[in-house]
Image (cartoon, rainbow, N blue to C red; front, side, top):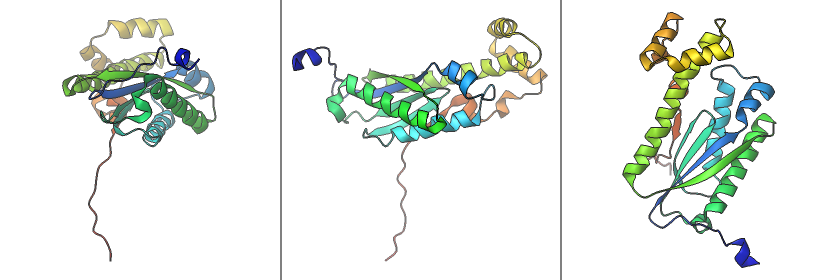
Length: 207
């Protein structure tokens, strides 16, 4: 029976970086119907994601960098970390469970985050990954600002969606500027997300 249970176990190979990405499952419904959040961004939801990310730094993995944007969290785990023998199903299940439980308790609403483990062999691909997620954050942020600006000015869901999809980046910035929004002045967490890492600080001791 034990063999059947472990038949499809996968392990992240040694000397490879482990990146884990967690995503909110059904968060569109959660944010629209249960939490009544401000659009396009709500500081309460942002604080919840940041708090959940900080929690994941404390659950037993050697996380050396964490990044969160929108409803997703990415964790960079030290390539020498051997927690759970680097077993993918354990990494995914434990981190998804920890994140889901913490976020649910934060808002007192049942919430689920799924989890995937990504094996990255070198630093170049690692940098590409986090650049990709940050660019995704920036692209979605700009589009969200345009969409909700149009919605708040009388456009329907379909109209706002179609208009936003047709705009170039410069056109999107111009649209916002015409409605009194300077996108360059938008808080950085809304445009690029938030990164976290540990930093050693020397302090003078007291005898």
